[in-house]
Image 1 (cartoon, rainbow, N blue to C red):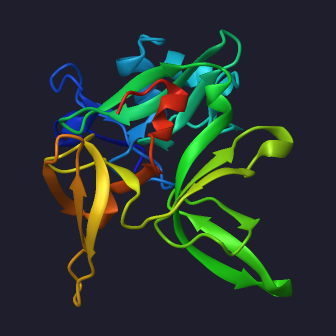
Image 2 (image 1 turned 180 degrees about the horizontal axis):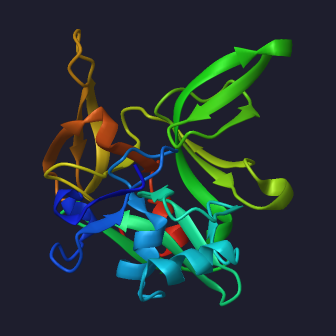
Length: 239
């Protein structure tokens, strides 16, 4: 399906529900169906296009780079921590969410747009005994065996530096993490406890913020962003 009814679109997309009946739907890809289609982002969030036709032209003219790749499909979804660049006008953005879970864009520098924060899904051993690192965003690359599932990596996005690991932050007690969903969205704290559930229920994580408040959330909402200091400062994000 290439379009969906505006009334049924996720509230996080922040669309005017009654302007038109339909809106572009999200293609299968690295994010789920709730991810905002990049064509909608260009038109309704960035106001770089007045309609879908103009958004398509911007994309088909290869003016948009998403996480180091030129993207031409208006259906491709974007989500938290994605990096979007417009090389012709030297504008670069990181996708974040606000406290209500709504997607927002944060302008960053050209240098900051050369790296990306990603989360490890798992790792597998492939032919030749090499270790393949599989990321939650759908990408994978050959790496070393030092990381594990749910760890955070800072990887390069351009040229020979693509998938080069710049930093590695383990998912463990004592690490600094940010919450990207639920009632504590965009709050930061040190991981103090990880409760592993002996069932299909999601694991629970307890964080302690700078004021000493206890924050509880599910494991899927956790992104490790450093050890002592937040690496998000690289992109000018105060957290």
